[in-house]
Length: 489
Image 1 (spheres, rainbow, N blue to C red):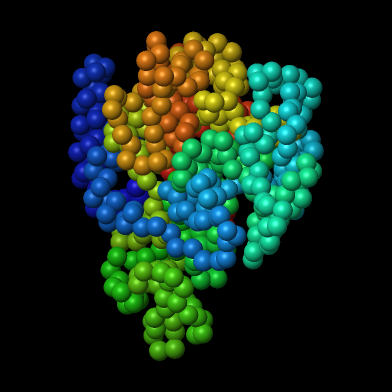
Image 2: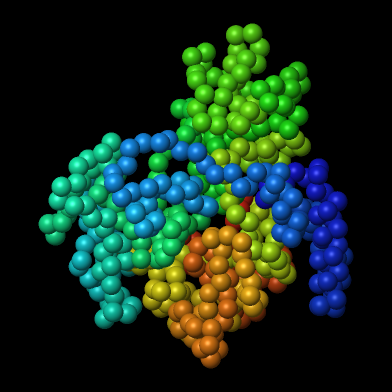
């Protein structure tokens, strides 16, 4: 997805010409002339994904992340997933999750070390953990609300189960035994239906980041100690422990650095200790007599001296330089585009309209998800249509999938939705819509209300639409590269 400007500049120009000509024909307006100036300022570029296979091959997007092989209790395994990389799974391939405890505005939510707080009690009233909302209000669909353990089944252990490495067995409040990893009680998600699904939670940016969301659990990445790996929309990104990204240089060759002289004004080799030994895909070579440098899959790695943000992608904008990923994320389905906007690289539909995801955690003691079609839709209807499903559908229409559309990945899928209820439907149901979904959640565009909506590909008027800037209950664009969302180093 992260394409070098010098190699695709003409292609982007041609794609933009085609797009603006098409929009001019559809609207009768001089779309091309209208937006040329804006493009000069914001560098609008449509990276049409029908051309993606060539770039995928160049970026080795089929690579699977290596991980540290450690002892596992019987019945557990490691699956390398598309977005989260390696995760722990049970014998049926269901991903394992933890519930990290967080201090909220009012009280705390989640598990403490070696103690499970997700149980069989059914909560039917709000907890009031997110001020200014008081506790005691009835939750939507309270009569049919499941318990925490019904949506997050505990990973139970037999009475004779024994600890293995970081795996321990804890006693649950109900008297049963449960597996824990590094002190965190483990659960599966009722949303995961097949091996490799990680639909219950994610570590990617722009997933729910208020409240106390769950997290997938997995083994440590097999990287040297001074490196770390983070989940991003573009893939599993490698950085140094201090958060600085690392890069490779196209003009290098295997175990041979060609960055010297003026090149060193902007780049610094990532040096290794003399005693360092190979780790998985990581090796060292002698850069100069007595000086060793790290290499990933044989290619020397560097820091970009001008990087000022954690997990920066800025160095990859420079000709011949690339961020290092242990594995790349899957591409969106054909017909989607990634466009440059004032906030970064954002996903758009085939007409360039910004695509949004809905995020939601309810204000209960067990913090259940309310962002998928199997959950109550009252939260979403309130946020996008003042409780009116018809108004919600007009303001945030689903991204419709053509009949027979396939995504080519497990991350993207299609599903049938009843637009009146927001719940799943059968293809034969009257009025059912076949829509695109990302990680099992439908995606939307923003047509707006009262004349206020996205009108051009530059618009992101529904970005952070909702409570706590959309981080608790609301809409946010699918951003592949956020120019402003990362913290300073």
